Image (cartoon, rainbow over all chains, first blue to last red; front, side, top):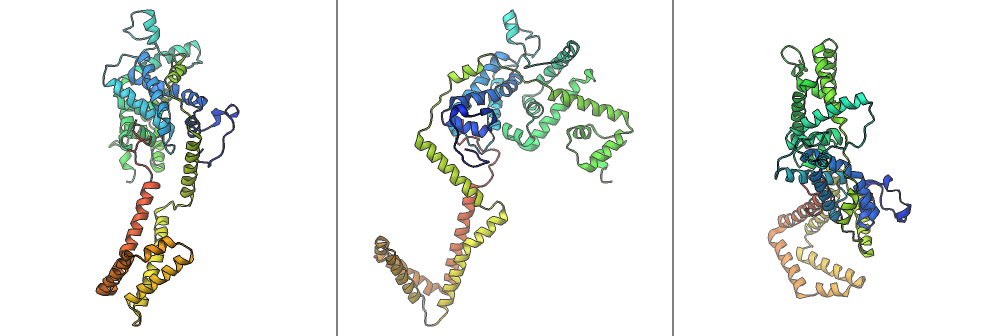
Length: 211
Length: 229
């Protein structure tokens, strides 16, 4: 089923190329009980959802738990999802709310590429270390970017949660302002204010790293 | 001057305007003015480069990978319950119908106004015809209603709907016709016009309620799911 092209029957599961389907099409397949469709949705959104929550809560282990909760909540309610809305907006909305709920219950830790400063054992260091998906820089570039990355990640970590979410959804996920407003459930003008103030604070905090 | 608002007193653009320039959200005329200023102002050029560096750094932030087995840990707790064949067929029919209605329904307020006017047209024409007939001296509201009722009964009998015919021949139906005739006799043409006008307004209100609930764009506060999570 597709909101754009009308209804057409789907070929048998093993003939489908899930990667070529839209989110709405995959959701409708998931509603039919196709496990492959569920896994496709997880595959598409595990990194962006985990990244958003990780940068919100600043704790890898907790971020994984919260990201899992987000997916479980979304996928168990897939029958109630309204296909006229973007699936990405729905899942980001739930991820944002899940992260915010956690922040209201605890104080976040400092994020570091070298692991949490509060880690006491090698296992804890590894558990609290950011693992970027990939980086292809030369050793010199890696060192510079690692430092800049750490600085900017730390600067992002000092922002208010709302500013952080808006900045991440805008710059990292590339969402338009209108969709961010839907995700955060605030007016469009508020989103623009969050992003503008977030950027200004980042500029001030990164002043010593003029490029 | 039209573009004075983007500059401070010393004719340097504000930091907000430089940010908007890098973001690409300035109007064309403002952007042209700013860019011409940048050609001769190293200080503002530096600020723009700093904004560009920040934007670039933010856009270059990596997406992090959860640990191995994340997908499996999620799937263990997901309930997969395939729908029954009849549920899928029903869902498919509902979507087909909604898609069809969406295609033929008007897309603009003007279109809806035209559709409502077209639907109200039979009422207006019918009311005008009744008013014209009643204006004839040899036609009274009573005889008109009686003729209408008899014609209606004959027509319904003609298509074989004996049940509806029986209803029309009941005391209740006769009561309605009698009282309607009495009302028109009492209220006259103005009363008849008011009845027709009221029916027309009710029809248009019904169409408006239907439009708002079926085709109106959802508000930002609406849940994405049909029920809250």
